[in-house]
Length: 154
Image (tube, rainbow, N blue to C red; front, side, top):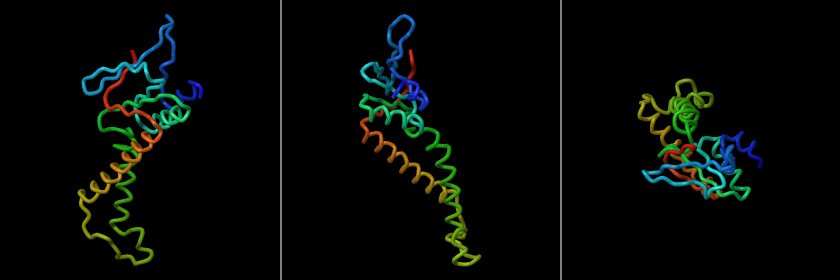
């Protein structure tokens, strides 16, 4: 896959050359240890949907790939504060109020009379944990190294 294709997925390659002819590098700081990432063909900063797809695509093409994200934030905003939690909360409310089952059981049907915020957050956290587990398994299955920490280009 060409570098332009990887760039579409939010990925930066280590094979880019600077004007002076030296290769660019990525410095990764994980738990206070600084790693030089030159032994990877590709380092992806951020594990959101675009980063995941780019890393897995490169790994399937035989590249040695690492993905770097902040501690406990694998999956990006989509999993932690965006799409997954908001849709999970919406679906939990519909389920717990029995709204979708009222067609079959009548207008007064409700799974729970009093819905608490604890009920909703419990469901959202369970779904988010499952999504993170699925993402980690997919990255591991494709041979992508996951590093938790901060990364920057130098």
